[in-house]
Image (cartoon, rainbow, N blue to C red; front, side, top):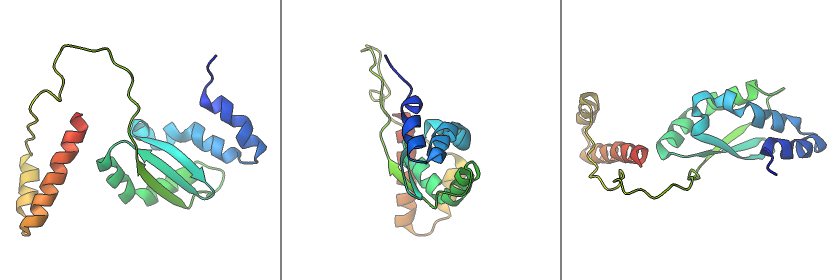
Amino acid sequence: MTSHIKTLLQPFFQSNNQPWKMKLLEKWPEIVGQLANRVTIEKIYQESITLGVYDSCWMQELYLLSSTLLETINRNLDQPRIKQVRFKLVRKKEQKKKKSTAPTHKDEPLTITLTPTQRNALEQITDPDLRTALQSFLIRCYQEKRT
């Protein structure tokens, strides 16, 4: 017999006088919206929350938006309870797939073509080392999306 994790955790949170944690878990997809498939709650500890992020590019973006994310989380609770947001890069749990004889993306050569806007932005950077590092970062982001 299987049970939803929410059903199993609810008595624990209520007995510890922390129903706000259950509310946070329940409302998480609503709080993060379309990011629900990219970000999960890994740990809630006192006034801190650790979020698991499946993509390093998204982790960087969320880090830059952490104050907005913090406000959104607290707005959905009965009172401001979270004071710190931390991020952790996690691997998505893959479902077992049937073996296929069709070629995968990994078998194909990976060709990344930057858009004219991206190329123009990179050309504006005068430091060649910084330009190369940013270009490599951008290409890695595209490669991670593809795998």
